[in-house]
Length: 337
Image (tube, rainbow, N blue to C red):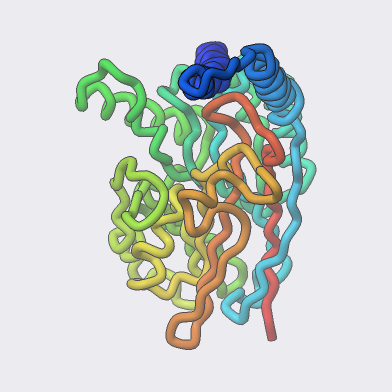
């Protein structure tokens, strides 16, 4: 796929100057002038060399420049018992991205473990097409650990949307296989419109996880299988003490589309955008499609602040990253007195 993409773009970059020359040549002929082709040919060649050089840099180096981002989430809603609680937020593994670099995935796992997290939250797109991508990495993935475990949700790719030629029933079977793999083989707490309680003394973190939910208004429409209200209600009144909710939802459009208008969930973690995997002049390509595309966003509704954090992902759809390195985010919860 990557080679096909390079060939296609090379042809386009060579054709564009040629077409411009042809137009200029026609105009020049009508005006009884000549129009040499050489400058246009050199322009096409330079464009191709710049493009291919940039793409090869992004393939060989850019996608392996791992970044650890340390940040704080400070809020009066953080229970005092969870003050200093460390969450590692990761997203978008797209495990086929590591088929040529098992060592880099091992480096990612080692780096995450080195943070000594209390909790790891994975916000979807575990695979690109199906669970078979994960099998070669099982032993590596099983090394990942945190004191309170690993929470995860499903992203759009996890629903086998892009595995063409499968019936709906076959796609659903792939989703079931992936669910069983994460829960049973890896021991992850995969939340499919469910909640999970983490207790410290008499205080709780309620981790809410929903299937991919794509809302209109930004980004691109994929699949919406989330049931946020079901996930919130699942635990009922089980948690009697001080409680803070954290939502894991793959697509950040869900935050502005449903989370903010209908709930008071203070913290949402998402992925999905990859920040476009390319940054030009300081701007991620994803900002052309998403209102919220990377990092932190905050809004205040009814005197309460709601926050969204978007991780730019670890894997790739196209195996190139330019100015957007794979990211591990370390979020420390701090109680604001």
